[in-house]
Length: 383
Image (cartoon, rainbow, N blue to C red; front, side, top):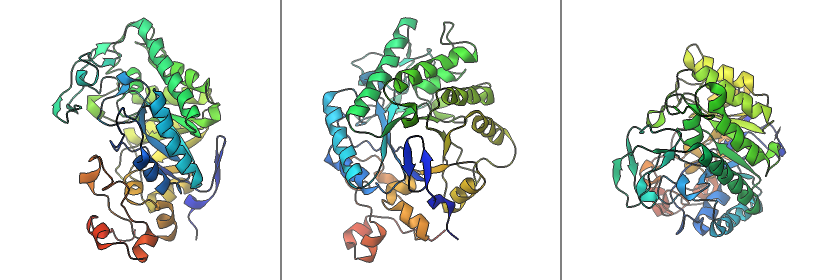
């Protein structure tokens, strides 16, 4: 019996041929000036068989950067670089959204000419940050944004959305997950403001609402998605009432009639979002608050992704590492073919190795070079 993963679906303005999406994956391969280059275009073109590609997180302003060689969408050179990517994906028959990103406190003054990163409040993240010189150093206490500065950051998201349209994307995804700036405004643990952007839930939702309003001023809402990670503990981020906070965020997305909600879930147990406890309760509340398509993302495999579609929890499933190592992942899942295992040591090393040299199934059958095969780990068994 054919898997429901391979049934067609309309998501917002898009008619998708199946339900296997590509999750955003930071790869640290941008060129000088954080400009996408030909290598990036090759990488995305190889994966154009995804129902929808969501690009790697892309900073909307220089202050939004917190990692080396991550692309931006705030300069003309970056727009031109991304045009090469979108053209390559479209020529291969694919669809691609740009993920709009601002890291907030997850950065370092080394990225900002000695100025501290900005955030809702002066709450230092847990852990360390990788500087432009590739040194791991402790995070700094961020500088709280002044009330009058917040609309200026909202404007950066608007300009990023405008630039994404100029660069030829099919839509945009607002990055509200993983402990970055929007998530920092949402969570009670990182938002200790006493102005209109802090305190009660409605105030903590205000920044997200203003960003969404700005973005949907540039794009029709049916070409905009939102990514959330309700139970992430990234960089020590926390919230006292995650069910209320994230069902509220989902309701805000619903108010704008966004195309989809993209949920980052705990990777275990499998299948995600089953059983009892906080995980099931929080994600059920989020799902209940949003009427549009839901994209699930949580270390799914073919079996658990099929289950999520069959029981009506998810409408699409986004794959990350599996898509990294398998440019032809939809075919492999459809035909139950072996899956390449990603080489974690090459996730962020900056060249074609572990980026554009993973073989497709046809390449393996047609005699991929010994050098290429030796560069990969063993193939995983079917499953």
